[in-house]
Image (cartoon, rainbow, N blue to C red; front, side, top):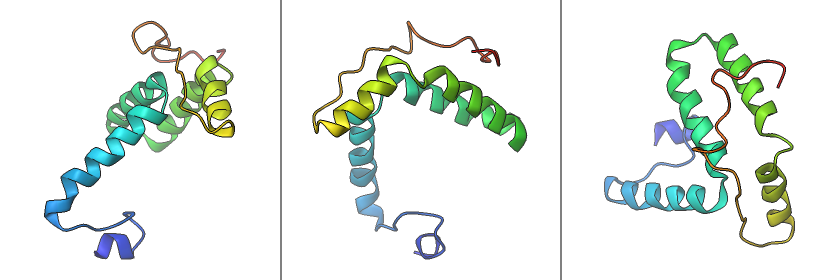
Length: 105
């Protein structure tokens, strides 16, 4: 409860409600978020443990530039505006960026 009160967490739940709530969030991410974006975010999260805050910021910006303007970024906005389920085209296995992403991308 303290973490939620301090703004560190969205909410606090009794232990028996944690897994169902986590599964609900995971289903929402799987359904409404582009797979390539999620994979890149997860990779950056794990990598950030070994990077300085400035390095994380630079890497995040590079990756954002890699993703923006591509088909899934456009599809996400259009699906939301049209109130329909998104149809993702990019794949983590086929469309993975050069790692680390080069600044000229």
